[in-house]
Image (tube, protein in one colour):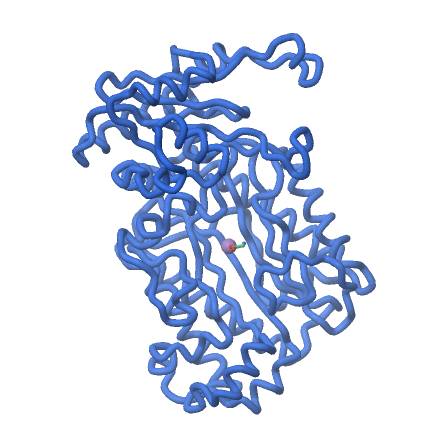
Length: 461
Ligand code: GLY
Ligand code: MN
């Protein structure tokens, strides 16, 4: 668990940031997560604490809540000590009082006191809930209709927390390095083991084993697919066939909750064919352009556009695109091949803080562009030293999208559809790295992992 001194300092900083935003009265409420049933109450998904709760209170056990009184700065945690009935099933756990003390919180109250205390607080401040249980508890405690709980969530609280969590301190960077290290091991295991004739599920199992061996688990459901053109394909039923590409998008979560998120694309056989290799190299060049443009003080939107431009230039060299690459990117023609965003922030969530609302997490209060492609960019705002984000360009030949655009003769000035058809068999290629923004630029987190086509082929034996 994070040191009490760090957690106490974070709570004090939150209070100071809220005061600077004109909020210095009332109670900030942090309902923690409970168990989440899969198919009946006692068969739950693996427990995952809310990330802001972890960040400020450090306690990862179900059915807790916490509060900070803004006038006094006093923090309390709400929860119940296990009794003998619980111990029979869970074994003895450290007492909640000692866990709270280790988090620098002196006051522990029964869990049932949270809602009445919140109801009595003169003013309450809360984050928009993303689980129904939390929504209903807050609605009952605050005497509000469930719909009103989200719309009345505290914008200053969102802004204050985004401003804190988006800058990772040294201990957090060390945890992220660890998460990316386990994630690299997951990807190297797949590179070494995936063979024609195996199922996608068998590769997913190898990757999952590495994540669990790291002590934590997966940071999101594994994408291990022979159909890389389906962006978030969680189906693992296909058999790996010689000549195709395999796309692995998978990451580990450390015991403390920090996420890694990498994507690797490799030939199912030992070598890329010439078209696969051409597309692969363009994706790598787009990643390099994106990383070079992701600098402190510059909007991440610029990095996205730099990667898009590299894709337009690269595809033009193959005759797939044509015309001026800047004009093509400005028009959005490249999005036929790169319809998603270049990246997102990474931290205690794999899409860090996405539950706090993208306007402030990704856009400093503005919003996404509505242009196809840019409309899928989760992060557009200026970068600051200490931010951690992904860079994950891809090129995809999505049959349904190509058929639609072709039938509409869309962007024919920039796209040669006959050439597109010649490359359609490549399917999908994505490459993803995790980056820390530094004072002068950025650096890739985790151990060295050479993604050059030659290194990938060497890893395939
Ligand atoms: N790795 C999955 C995603 O970034 O959406
Ligand atoms: Mn990602």
